[in-house]
Image (cartoon, helix red, strand yellow):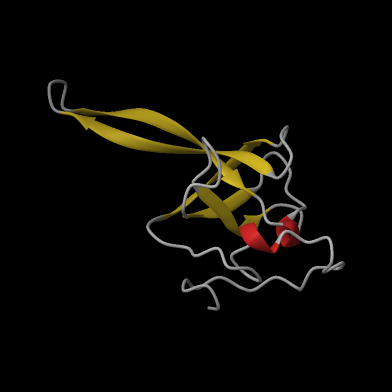
Length: 114
C-alpha cells in the first residue's frame, strides 16, 4: 500500500538510470488520487499507453430497462508494468493530467500474462 491504495508493489526497475521516475506512481513522484476503475486492455499500439475499455449498464426509465454502454480510457503504463497485452484485465487510477488525453495510470494487472 505504498501509493495509498491496496495494490501490490511491483519489483524495482532493472536499469534505474533510464527509468522515467516522473510518471511512475510506485517509485516516482506521481500521486494517485480520485477514482480507481477496472477494465480490459483493448489496444497497446502506442508507446507507454494502453486503451482500457469498461462496460457498464445505464437504466433507461422510459423503457424500464438497462442499456449497455462502454467507455474507452487512455492510461499510462509505468515501466515496471510494461508486459501488458490485449485482453488483460487491469486496474487504473486517476492522476494529474499526463498529456492531452491521459489522466489515468495502470496500477495493477488483475489477469493475463504477468
